[in-house]
Amino acid sequence: MKILVVDDSSTMRRIIKNTLVRIGYDDIVEAEHGVDALSKLDGVGMVLTDWNMPVMDGLTLVNSIRSNDQYKTVPIIMVTTEAAKEEIVVAIKAGVNDYIIKPFNQNTLQEKISKILGG
Image 1 (tube, rainbow, N blue to C red):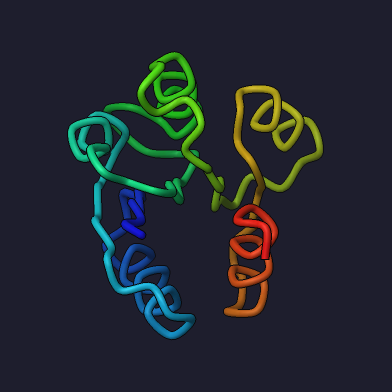
Image 2 (cartoon, one colour):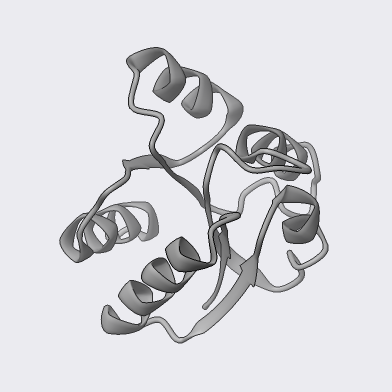
């Protein structure tokens, strides 16, 4: 399964990518903001996105993905420092399947992906 990792921090993208590889995913595409991500959605089976990014933020990206019939069922996990309950509710209402607060560990990422994929 191809996974799209969207974060304006190359360090965070590398951390997420390395964690995904450790749990068994190696088809990973990176994007540095929402506009970049939208151009790389073809064939993607899951999106992991940050919230706070320049050009297009993660919430706008989620709304764009959810409004496109071709991608509206692609699982999305928001991976962000936004920890307030209000932000989590906003993200869930926008259509994210789950939410991870930075910093996170390998087990957290693995559990969230397993939950979304049903196993």
